[in-house]
Length: 82
Image 1: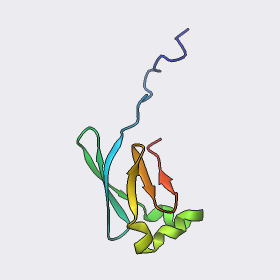
Image 2: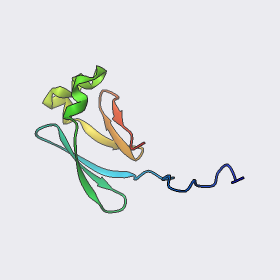
Image 3: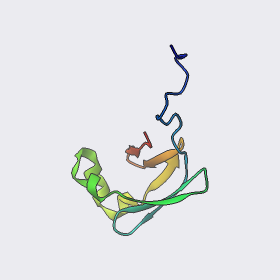
Image 4: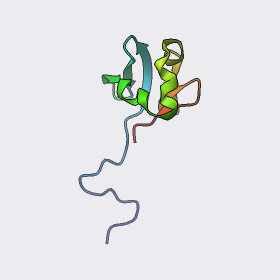
């Protein structure tokens, strides 16, 4: 039996850490990761759910920052890589 802390085959054990974020038009985020990789994430599909509706306002959406290796808005919403 594997040790409880041992990684499971085929399962990622570490999520990528977000090192930078930039909000763009169209509710997209340009994310920089600790590995040096950059990706674009479209937040639009989330804007119909609960408190994510608040991010539909461009001035609220632009108030995004990196907090604890993930993305967080001033209103307390976050996107965790998990």
